[in-house]
Length: 407
Image (cartoon, rainbow, N blue to C red; front, side, top):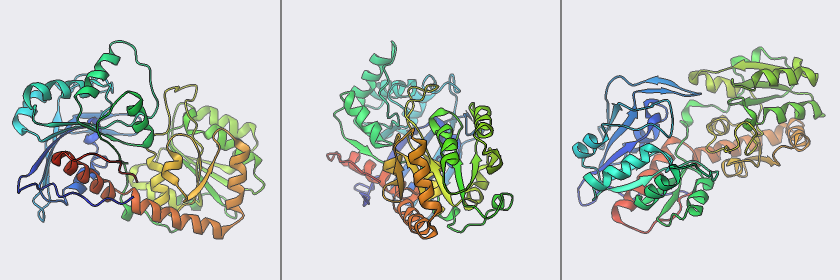
C-alpha cells in the first residue's frame, strides 16, 4: 500500500529526530535517512556506534558526518558515539546519550533497536528525565517471541510502557509487540531496502561466464547457517528433473557441511561456490542468475530464536528482475507476494518441483521476473521506505491515531 507523506514541517517548525541505531555506521544502512532529507523540515541526529563489526559489515566511523539536502534544507548529522560493549548487540549502550538529548532537544527519539535492549532502556530512561515532551518510538524486527531471562522481562516492560509508538520492521514483529501487550500505535514498515538504479534486469554477469553453459542458473545468497536452508536447496537440486547449475554466494558456519553434502548428493560438479561477495559486486552476482532461491526455515536447531526478518537479498534479487522461489518461512511470503513461487519450508521435493517449473518455462521466468522488479520498485526501495518513515513521524508529531503502513 502506497503512503502519502504527512508534511512534517508543522506550522513552519522543523521536526527534530534523534535516531539511535548501532548499524548506522554503514552508509548503506542509513540510506533511508538520506532519502528522508528529500522532505522539508527534517533535522536528524543519528547516534551510531564508532565500530560496526558483524557477520556482514565492518565499518568504522571516525568523525561526524553531515549531509544536507540543498533543495529542502533538511539536514542529517551522523555522530560516532562511544558505546559500551559495542560488539554485544542488545547489551551495548551510549554513556554520552544524555548530552546528545540535551543538545538536540528532539521532538522524537527513534530507537532502531529491540525493546529488550540496553539502548532502548537508556533512551526511555533519559527521555523521561531530560526530554519528557519528546515522543519515544521503538523499532523492532524480532518476529519470534523470546522468553528472556531476568532482568530482561522487566526492562522490556519498562520500554514498552514508555514508548509512544512503534515501527515494526515486518508483520511478525508487529504480532510480537501485540503479544507483549503493546497497545500504542504500531506501523508496519520495511525500513531496509535497496536502490533500484543499482540493479539491472539484464542477464550476463561476469560470474556467469565461469559457470557451465546450457543450463539455467539457480542462485542462493546469504549467510550459510541452517536457517537459510541451503541444506534443503542442495537435495532439491538433486531431485530436479531439469539439470541446472547452482551459484552459492556467502560464507558461514555450515559452509563445510554444505560442500560435503553436495559431494554426497553427486551434484558437486553443478555447484559454484562464490564465497563472500563485496557489496559493490552484488548487481553482477544477481545478473549471473536466472532464478533466485530462498529456502529459509524457522527456528533452526543452531539458532532456535531465529526467523527470516527482513531479507535484503530477496529485494536485491527482485530488483534484478529474478523470479523467486521462496519457502513460507519467516517474512518471505510478505516480501515476495505474487512475484514468485512460495513453497512449504523444509520440503526439498516441493522446492524441486517449483524450480523445475521455472527451469522449464523461460516465459514464466520473464513474467515473474518483471513482476518481481515492479513489486520491489513500488514497495521496497530506500525512497519508498523513507516516504513511509516521514509519514509516520508526521503522524506521531500531530498526535494522530496510528494505522498500519504496509509494503
